[in-house]
Image (cartoon, rainbow over all chains, first blue to last red; front, side):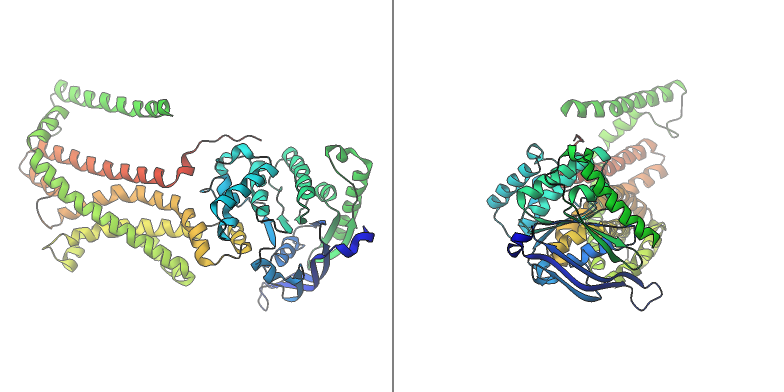
Length: 264
Length: 259
């Protein structure tokens, strides 16, 4: 990895970021304190930690959905605000956020529509995206007709439709059953490999973080701080990887870091 | 789909026919006096005999109910859109709207007669407008407001402004809420129009036919007029349902959940 580092641009760079909610009031909350984090292009980073550690808040600072109280957040060398306006990232939430009134293709085409793409271009792209998430035959269905896993696949297709270089995911598989979840993880890794997108993934599942990530960032709560960064190298992963001793080792390492967080 | 529709229409039609037959039979067998409860067949006969009068009266009432309904919808939706833009206005007005909506607005009919006079039909129309306005305003406002926070964040991630969010998210999100209010308001508009007629205004409408026929002991005519009024209410309710189906195709498509 080190030898080709000169080709790798910094996707996200956060310096001394603090986030305080309701400052100067009785319910003031220090959500994040002194966050320093660098994410290289092409990385798959997970943010994990107990509830209240600010992992979703950190993701929203990168997305410019929240503004840091202090410090600096850069995305592809620009301010987070400029990156949002340039639509440099796509976002996927736990609640799929698909619009009931748009069928599957129309949901995928929404960001393209807002960017003023022509109808023909939009349709061509949404076909490609449906192929990518393997839902070609469901293009005319409405979200309510789909299972939770399928809805999340549509939501990923929508987030990637305009080819952002960064994909931000906030517990996207949190509401899925375990089997669907494992299947979606394998799918997501395939999509990640095929598109080369940088991914920042918020989760509270230890095996999920260990399985997916090239780096797991462990946060500690009250105030949210980065406790440790764990590098994981499981190579190319499949469902068999879950029975690999190396996977067991990675989950153990993440689990121990989280225990240390709880103890502190 | 077609079979399904026949299957869902058949039971209520059967029950309706059996009900009418039982009614007819019971009045004959128990020799119930015509002034207490006329037979469906004699109501039907009156309906044919008095068709010209009844049709005119229903039309006059219908005009007030429908125009009041449309104006009430328009005002309700407009105010919902305006209050959605200004949070303070919304927070201040909505509790009052809910409180007023819980009061029997038709009881205001005599007051409206004083305010707006009895020379035209506006006093009656105002009662309909008021009855329709509140449920439409409250429900539509709720639909515009109750959007999942993730959906708003998603739109912000696309660098969308308030107008785009209103068009792409809030308005479509409010449609089912609006449709619910319409189902409430459509039959209410007929009830309001008729009750308002009882308190005054031009005397050629269906409410007046009911009161005057009952007054002259022409109970079968009164019942025929009631049948016409029910027909009007059902017609408006039906139109509300059709509007709902047409405007929201995604709500009637069936489930086929599968991984």
